[in-house]
Length: 436
Image (cartoon, rainbow, N blue to C red; front, side, top):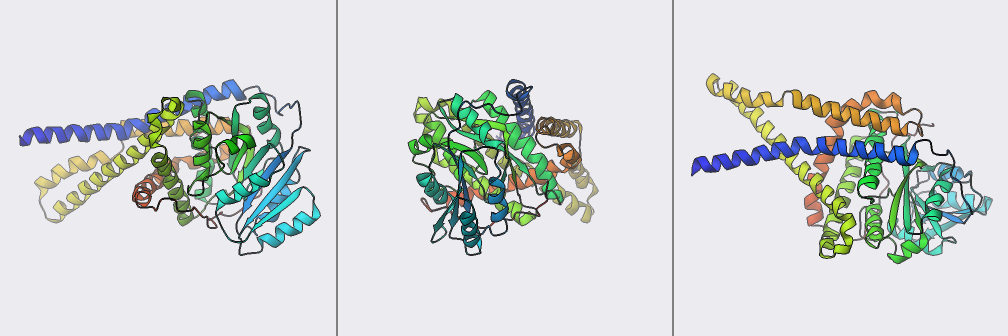
């Protein structure tokens, strides 16, 4: 009986180790193949500027909370868009700094700017909803208060809306402009190798997206009205609005030529807080939409749901494997200290599994290949990308660990989070701005 239990436990461990190793390997090749197909189908030898048959009005919404350091730069940059018919709606969401005064000053100097002041901080979702209600157009582009929208982005967004009546949203291609530290440089590679690569692959294989990036996405106003706009209680409002739209049958597309230059954390605390919020937001999606399998009409998003479940399970399995390695190390050190060579020799056999072998070389090479291809795909839009390839070698050691740990920490936080609690924002770590 004991031998049978031991054998079963061994099989479980082998399955766990196999899943831990093969899941990221399989997904890396899946994402890479999908991204290459997307590039050949939608990007290769395509015109450099979008061709439009009409010029409908567009509202660019900029939610602002304590953005006095960036408001003038962001709004001023928007005034130079290569498009004639647009307005800028800046929402001052109860800022406690000088944001409101700066926005009012800019509004007085340019009629294209409208400013909405909210008496107290109510969260990004409420700010977006307020602007969407008051917008004077059929198309709304939402960006963050620190994002510099590329001057040619509007036509690229409109091209999808004008040629696809079922297109409810189009998400753009965020590019990192905080590149003065190791964390900033790593994120330059990450946003290409994960954000851009995965979005391309999801559009190819699923025809759906898990997230339309909140930092740069355009919406059809009628689609927003159809799903009752943004939810107030979701930590990642961009994930939630993506799922709401797709479950109502709206198409969401990825447009890599619609760029936005954004700021990202360059401290470990800022990075942790950001990734923890993302992890909690992903778990909220699982919790909120777990009932989709009761309606067969929602089948298009099922693969996205399963993919995210697998990523959470992978994070948990990696934690178990790392814990077992740590136990092996502690056992090894204990027996060496206790002068028990025979038992220590057994511990050494377990400890050697920590050392890189052919399997580690395969997954390391796969990671570098994935990042190389992703940087090559995006370097046509960001010509400095390839200089950051050398830094991507550190990505698996640092960011994988952070992303994995945030999922583990996020699970109990979401389980015990009060339902219906409004999601409010705080000023994030924006790193050190560099001018490109």
